[in-house]
Image 1 (cartoon, rainbow, N blue to C red):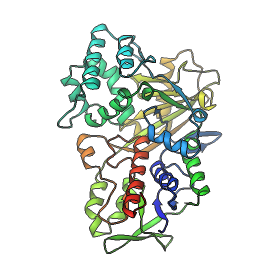
Image 2: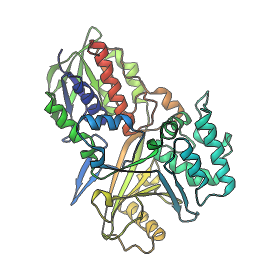
Image 3: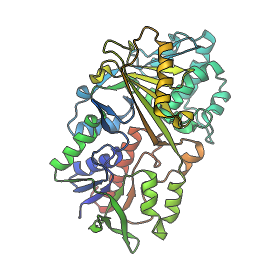
Image 4: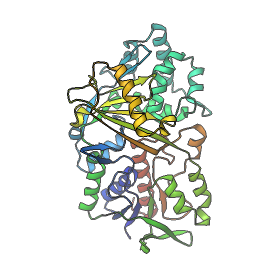
Length: 438
């Protein structure tokens, strides 16, 4: 069996590579960039080593944790695992705090909602009724609708929608409440809250994203006979009699009976479209809309702290802020703006100054910042609308031996790192089954 060719060294491609390597199937990974990790990678800016956007992992990310274990990463070395605490504050709202106790699921959620502060008793009852219906009776929707519609059907008041559901929706889906798929949101909520209480834990990175999975995964693959080719761009696919035969790299054909395309939708469209048998699939993938994420890193004096790992923001430009002290970066705050908006058109200096002014109003005792840096990822995720979720392709393609991997595929999850990893694993298992190696 020729090595399985994996195009793309992001989290999906590396998940496929690790899964295949762990079954003693040789792989060759081609990555166009000079480092692994894709959109969830580590970058160096001036004197900072920061992530290309702030990511939050949860205890429910079982496949991510499994692959980390395979490649030799101990959870305790890269994460602090803490019970879920949501603290939402804003310029014109009463702060909300929901903290989950160490109790069996889903009792921990109901108990945490009862004990929440900043929420009226009637609102707590609205939340408990909704969550009881969702978690215990497995409430489902026959037709996927927007999360805003679903919350209206379940009589959630505007105050909860603004202070709780909208920030949670943006954090989970990178899509506004009025557009987001209820089916995807409920899938995540059930995985997080219904199985075991540890699934709701926050996994807060103590290292940069590169050290969490991409770099150890690359070392694992190479240590077990695989090949990682950095700065190698795949320009074309070679198809013969409805089966993949090779990929073109630097004008040379690399023979392969099995290829996994683990690249962004735009790149995937470019590689698929020249082949008539793949054109309908290419057009579907090309029509999947993308949503941005903007992260403003603001450096304050080293003694500046949030007093907690992260907070949700209401009535401000941004929706979430993370204290990077756990990453050894005291005083560095990562402020996240999810989804599209005017912030994507503003120049970086204007955007940073706007966010810094808002932080000064929220935290008047903080000193002025000493530095800032803006990272915009224009194609961070797919837009998680119901109709877009229905468009997402399967891992298998009409061409024998050609597979897709990426968080945009039909994982049942929104565009998360766990979704990307699950997609890569599914593609790898498809290859093994097709080749008889399963």
